[in-house]
Amino acid sequence: REPAFRLKQPRVYKGEFLWVSSKNRYFCFAIKPSLKAKEVSLDKEDNDLIYLGLSDGELTLKPQEAIEVSYLVYIGPLRLSELKRYGLNEILNFGIFDPIGRLLLGLLGGFYRFTGNYGIAIILLTIFTSIALFPLSLKSIKSMKQMQVLQPQIEKLRKECKDNPHKLNKEIMELYKRHKVNPFGGCLPMLLQMPIFIALYQVISRSIELKGAGFLWAKDLSIPDRLKIPFILPLIGDHINLFPILMIVAMFLQQKIANPMAKTQDEQTRTLSVMMPIMFGVIFYNLPSALVLYWLTNTVFMSLLQYIVLRPALAKE
Image (tube, rainbow, N blue to C red; front, side, top):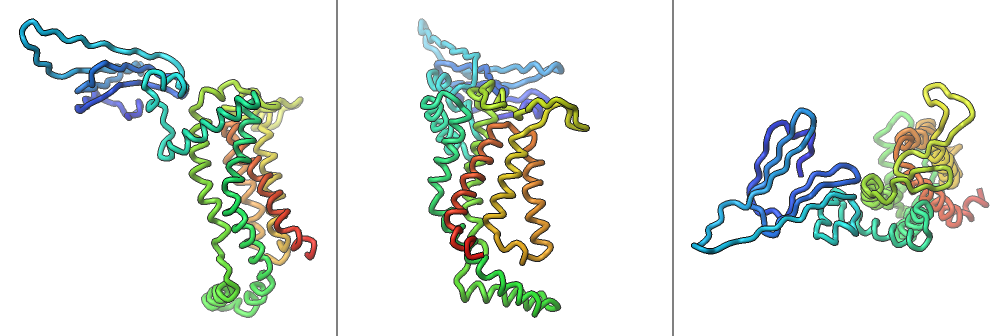
């Protein structure tokens, strides 16, 4: 694979090649010879016109002997079902997590055939993946609950060791050890979810199926939702992306459920709790609405799960 912007001079690759292609976000041009090519050449003109070349290499024929080489030419969408038909499915690639991406694309297609709407299909896919990760999520939530129970003792240690940070860290780790609490236990589900999130981002970014697919006020799930408003806002214009704003609200709600003892937290932790949802909102604001819908649904679902598990502690608090 050679990104077009890196192609500054002609390139020649030798080996065995089943096909050669040029593609953009949603469409591709591919040539597949009946015999494996021995050489592939690439070149680009100043007007960004790309040249693709295939060579069979040296062929030795006996007198009166003939050989026939045919070529399949595909010009069309990067739709996996179409590419598979011609043995070109490897053209559609979802990066380092390609197997996960193909699985998610298959699940998304299945949910779409069941519902007839890609927005609902994304919601169902999110719930499905959340349920699949439920055991790890439950372990994370219980770890958070244990951390909340220890919060008063941690605050007491902070006051006692405010002039000795090294001793404070040592005492806190000893406290965790005595109560068998893993301070990093809540991070594991997030880390395990990142490959899914990255693969889903690739699926959403490259799947022609989502191009033009609408859901609620979003007319195209492959771009930001762009809700029209009756007035003009400075730096924003006459529309807002509502999904990221709802995601920020959902993340604040999730933090309120997960951290009912927020008043006892230090100033730095409280500031981080406020800034984190806002930072996520800024990062997600111009991403495809399908991706934001996934994160929004996941946040709401996890908030409900946390509320159910932490409800006894919340009532007591």
